[in-house]
Image (cartoon, rainbow, N blue to C red; front, top):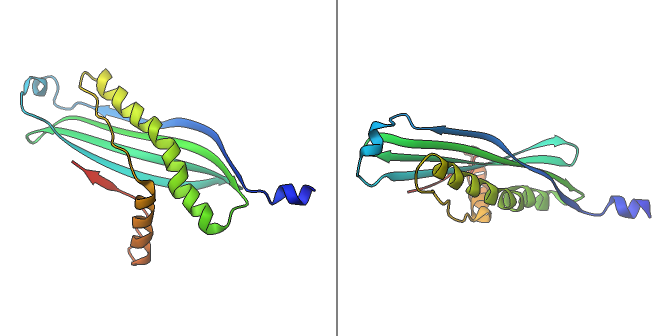
Length: 158
């Protein structure tokens, strides 16, 4: 019976936490008087690394850069992480869980943090759009197969 239990797939969230957060307003207070519509650029990244046998840290990072003309209004960099226990899965399924399911669980926390930081900084909230982590994972896999091997899943939107 113990052998049967040992082979059972395991997927558990151990912890969710804010790993890093930065807010910069390099041109305040003068730029706050500008009436022009700001341009918002958002970059997302996903990373994962094993931290113990069957335990992985998965991080989703957002960099939000808001500019008025050529000057930065504000810059937010936030990294939300989760620790997941994942055991007894075939390697292809393991990679999909780490690259798709885990970031999908971490991302809502990151969205809330970015929105909250914008509001606390005195700006309207930036609401990060929904992300298709499966498409991001497949694009990353295609890059790696194409010999690029960069390993970073980056999405840019305006």
